[in-house]
Length: 318
Length: 260
Ligand SMILES: Cc1cc2nc3c(=O)[nH]c(=O)nc-3n(C[C@H](O)[C@H](O)[C@H](O)COP(=O)(O)OP(=O)(O)OC[C@H]3O[C@@H](n4cnc5c(N)ncnc54)[C@H](O)[C@@H]3O)c2cc1C
Ligand SMILES: Nc1ncnc2c1ncn2[C@@H]1O[C@H](COP(=O)(O)O)[C@@H](O)[C@H]1O
Image (tube, each protein chain N blue to C red):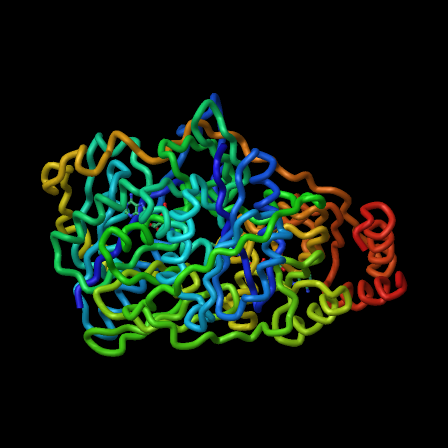
């Protein structure tokens, strides 16, 4: 039986949904399941971690782990992987996961695969499936080592309701801090906002909104819907939106129930971050905009006219 | 400061990819510098201009990389190393990282700048693995660099909860995101000068390493098949009076798609 260690995705003290999604997949392939949780103030999470579907919880809880630092986080994951004797270590999709996974792989002499959408146990070896070349093709990749470290693409696995686990906490000793790459500060302008990765609805704004006034207009729509508020790269590069709001190949990958793209042309790099969404609505004044090739519903029109009407019509529903 | 920048030649992602019998049809493909590496080159050249640095690039594989390397010279890179060897045909990230490690160890570099990811693999791991192999401090997904003194740099990394500001001791490795800068277009004078510059092309033997040393024949992972990606189909597109079509779409979202 294979042994899967899932790296818990914790943000602002809360366990994110990817953790139970990954544990559900581990169960589906008949694996033994453990989870490793790393943070500064997470002692209260152990029952949540068990309920997410794990039978062992490796917990590294230390004030020095409050802010993300790839070196110490790697040490914790490697420690847990060795204690559990994991043959697969799975990260949910996050910037921290993408930073730590290759390091863990190098330290464990394991193969590393990122943005995977499936894992197949085939005739004694592991195979993974993943998109490549800006989502233009899918690769099937054979893993030649006994161990695999993987980062799972957002929305790839579904959580099953009835998954349960047992609480069995193993405390990890705090790692040494990385004195050669010292995190000085976290500049966050997103506190209190809905996390894009978890949101059921995501509203994103593109260059079509022009400036701050246009952005505020679209943000009001996001607020009405209690939606995550994202952006194309154009608005991030323009200095209007924070980096961690960018949806796309080099930003966040999202797969909400409803994705609303406002004033976004639909470049392949943007599509790579959202085309796993269940339903896509696009508003664009150019009927030929490529975003309409992927949108389930398209409104051809000026966003400055359409968005206020959209808000009105949505309000009427409740 | 001596800077080593890694650069990979990749397929032009804007082209249509055709897949036949589990492989990408090479016919009609064009190859360009990886976008993230172009940003790494620009970042290196800016450090050279603003703080004084010697800049070297290294590229592994890709066949004839002359055009790409000349373009980087024209942007301001001073030295170019190209490692090409048939033994690298099956190379994965870990093997590329081993080759890059050998190149690093032959020089005396203070900073390695790699791209965050390559557009052909979309993998984002080679630079980070290289840092592990070299035992260097590493920050990935960097969107700004500031030189503090001869031994330290300060970088901004785009992280999950915001921008993380990290101070690093040199020698160090960073992987950069495309948002870090707008790569310059090479100018005529640079292009002319680049033509005269030498590119150091080496095979593994010239680098002083055997294929076995870097397990070149035993990649940790290998692509066994390419498949066409699932394409989404466009649905209903509405043109006309904004009030009418918007009301219609909201109704469909609520009652047909049932997502509102
Ligand atoms: C390596 C690489 C990685 C990248 N990664 C990402 C990424 O992660 N995410 C990302 O988004 N991009 C990414 N990009 C950039 C991408 O290629 C596009 O440049 C970007 O997505 C364009 O943003 P946009 O759609 O907002 O702007 P534009 O392409 O300029 O489109 C603006 C749209 O708004 C419409 N419009 C204008 N005015 C109005 C109006 N009044 N009402 C309605 N519609 C209007 C226009 O018709 C147009 O379609 C990447 C590029 C590269 C090379
Ligand atoms: N063959 C190669 N030659 C030079 N640099 C490479 C090579 N492969 C990967 N890199 C570097 O590593 C980065 C990440 O690549 P990847 O892990 O394939 O996404 C790229 O942006 C390059 O800077």
